[in-house]
Amino acid sequence: TDCPTLGLAGYGTVSSAAAAPLNGSWRLLYTNAKDAEAPARTQKDGSNKSSQFGDSVKTGVEVTTGQTIDATKGECVNYIALNGENRPFDRLDITIQMTPLSDTRVRLDFLRGRALNENAPLPFLKDFRFSFPPALVGDVIARIRGKDPRVEPPAYFDILYIDDKLRAHRTGEGKIFVQER
Image 1 (cartoon, rainbow, N blue to C red):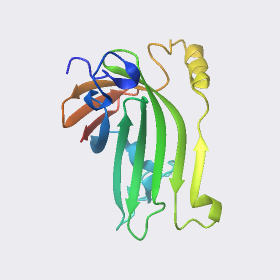
Image 2 (cartoon, rainbow, N blue to C red):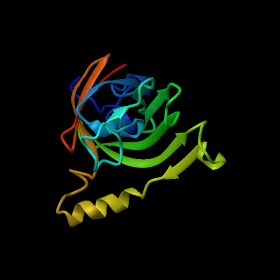
Image 3 (cartoon, helix red, strand yellow):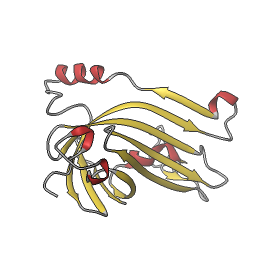
Image 4 (cartoon, one colour):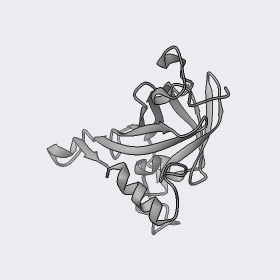
C-alpha cells in the first residue's frame, strides 16, 4: 500500500479501522533485535557475562511474541507469552501509543506494562502492573541530544513493506522486524 499508516489514530481517511493496514494481530517471524524476547532468556551460556538477561531460553520453554494493534485508538499491545514448566513468567504485555508522523513513520510512546507470573514468590507479583514515564520526558531528552521529536522521536519505526499478510519495519535503532497476520 502507498500509505501504511492510513487509518492509524485517525491518520488519513478510511471507511473503518478494519481497513487500516496496520490494524489487527501480528506474530513475529524474524528480528535481528535480541532484546525483543530478552526477558524470556534466562539461561546463561557464559559468553555474555555483562548482560542482565541470559543468552538463551531455558530448555522446554516455548516463546510466542507478537502484537495486537487497535488502529482506531492508535494503540498496540506487544506481548511475550511463555509456555513450559521452567518458564520465568507467563506473559508480559507492553501497551504503546502509536502516532503516525508520515505515511510510513510511526512514533511509539510506551504507556504501561503488565507482567503475569502464576509462580511468583509473592502474591502481588502474580499480576504486576507498571507505567512508563510520560512521552514528554523522552521528548526533552531528544531535544537535549539535538533531535526534533516531531521528526525523530525517542522511539519509532519506519514501515518498509506491508500487505494483507506480511509486514516489515525498521526501528530508529536500525533493528528489523518481520511479522505476519
